[in-house]
Structure formats: structure tokens, C-alpha cells
Length: 183
Image (cartoon, rainbow, N blue to C red; front, side):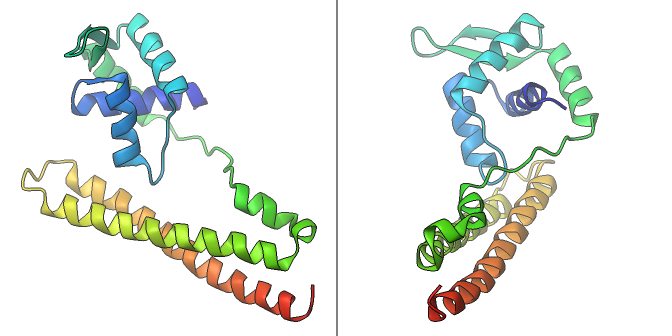
């Protein structure tokens, strides 16, 4: 599934929950999917235009002058289901910290240790955010049919964050050994 198709999937899926402006759409993606998915305004607005031209979403005047609110059409819901049935394409990750660590001899062990410590702190914060997302999802009185799927997704994020913490602890010990050896 090409990147644009994945963006279309994210936009259609988010709009299947409730109509939104492009700005609200990005905020919803960041707030609810941010642990595993992101979209920029530069991806969302072209996707909305493309989806509108295809008849998958429609725009109507929003509360603010000049802003449009988008909602899914019946054909958009069909397209959403079709896209969701496609096998996901694994996109290569882009992790700037691992890129720097791979070439760590340029920076040295001390600087790499700082990078990994920051990465560990980020994973710790992510785990705390996911714990809060789990509490909020479990406490939601509405108890939508989405809840079990949302909890499965949160669980995947929790597992990833715990794995990142374990890796960071192991790597910090290795870097400490390099620092002690004067490398």
C-alpha cells in the first residue's frame, strides 16, 4: 500500500468516527494514534482534496469562516473498508537516534550514551502516556465497539515501549563499558 493510500486510510478512518476540519483531523491523529502513526498537514490536506474529488468525503462550512468540515460519504465508507482489507505495507523506520548510534564512533561512547539515555527517557514517557490512554479507554462509559481494538493497539504500544526500555538499559551498560575502557 503506497504512502498516499495509507494516508487516505488514516484520514477516512478518522472521519468515520466524526466529521472534522483538517486541523482537528491532524490533532485527532496525533492525540489518538500518535504512538504509532503520524500525518502532517502537508499530507492531510492533499489527501482531503483527493478524497473529496473521488467522492469519498464531502466538505461543508465549518463553525469558523473559511474552514471546512469534512465527513465521510457512503462511497467513502466502502473505500475505507476496501483499504482496511488490503495487506499493510511495512515501511522502513526512520530513527535518527539509531542512525547516529550506528555511526557512533564518530561521536564517541559518551555522546552516544547521552543519546540513548534521552531515548530511554522518551520511551519512559511514552509508556506513561500509554498507561493514561489505557486508563481513559477503560474508563470510557460509552464503551464503544471500538474499545477492544483500541486496547489491543495500546497494548502493542506498551510492548514496544517496554522493549525500547529493555534495549536502552542493555545498550547503556555496553556504552558504560566502552566509556570505562576509554573508547
